[in-house]
Image (tube, rainbow, N blue to C red; front, side):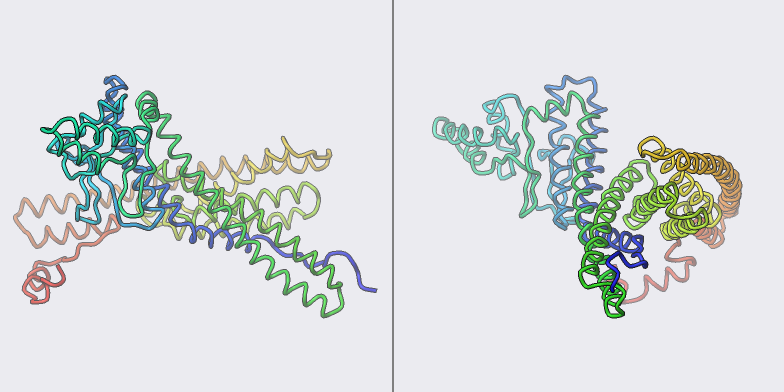
Length: 475
């Protein structure tokens, strides 16, 4: 008689989870770009708000309006894969320009925009209906646009001398910054005022809204991809078990469904978590973790280690199996850090300190998983003792890896400082000796030390390039 239970060969969930999340991060790159664009826009907004800190919010909101709309427009452009970008002229160093915003495609300006945010639509109508704004896109708060258009049309009929300006407003007024299929979605006057009153809170809310959308999109795609991958693998393995007579077809279907569901849930969680990790790393200035593939690996590692710790606590796996699973996870984490060149640009050779960073991350995941399980899971005494011992061991490793990192970082930093000092000394010496050739070589060495290279290391190479008849085409 065929056994009705689950096959003894369980489907490992790490690979479906990782690849499902990796596929999702690729499919949702536009969402990640939209988040990055919103972060960039809110950074500019914060700078502008800080400069206007002493100004009454009822006045400063009008200046900040254009930064808010630009950030929203650019986030939508990134989401839709558009090359369009809105730039605030004040942020570009031209605060007195007639246009408050320029919608550009590369270096080409497509549309000039004048923005006015006032407490009353009637005031905005008068302010925006000036000769110098003719032909521009006239941006007002979204809750006033319809009323401004109506007032402009009425005033065009009543004031012959200003009729052309008012008709231009009636034609070009808009409640959202827009160009083609890209738009900001608009901003109401109350929102502008609230943003001016609490700029830091407003900027954080806009960024979190963007990363929330990214997390939902990435998590959803990851769940679908992870479920499909795990389901396919499970179907093949269980199909072979049915063929060999180890399980029934009904059991195979149940097993496949369970594997797909579990992988979908873990992949979804990993995908959503990776978006949050990527955002946090971007805000902290950690460029390597700001890359989607690295964030996915770190998120998957954290979830996998948590599952392994719980299995160990329940006695489902031995200490040796836990060590093996954590070791595999740590290897993936280290590989992603190497690929991301996490510290190479600062500390010289990547291998110098990546090992300690990877060890610190894995130990941290072990410690966090252990303490979370202790506080939330209902464990028997023996299970709790195992997890407590694991948490204590992880805490010790954390301290050791931190000390190791600090030591290795200090050593690598001293080496890099010595290399930079030697480059600067060589540049200064050759400049003082009026030796342009040696100076160019020293500059090239400095560029190489910083991880870059100069296109021409010798004057002869530059001369040959400029004398080449095809150079004009290359330029």
